[in-house]
Amino acid sequence: MGARNETLPQDYELNTIFEALSKSPFRSRFCLYAKEREYLRDKGLPLVLKHAADLIGRRLAPASPANDGKQTPWRGHPVFIAQHATGTCCRGCLAKWHGMPRGRELTPEEQRYVVQVIGRWLENNMTD
Image (cartoon, rainbow, N blue to C red):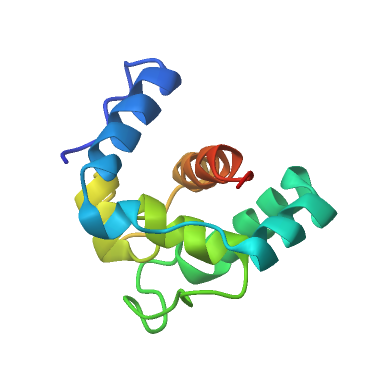
């Protein structure tokens, strides 16, 4: 995918990422099931994105996350599903899809970007 281009408007960048993700048979198969959609509706997107920020900060942002490559469950929270769908589930996927290299802590800006990607996917997948 290459390094993120900081000079492009954020919407353009996200459109490019989502277009690439849509071409991946693996990434495009993820969806929110009734339980996760209900959770998202009940809690609201702002609270779920706070959960996302906390999860990213604890599980993905460290230079060497514990159990990297296996730290994101496959279900149980809408954020987990969104992470797999958007290639933000582990440091290897972050490097491949978003150009964020392994082996160093994610900056606060990068963490906000990851949450923004997750939020966009959740918004696009909130309905049946």
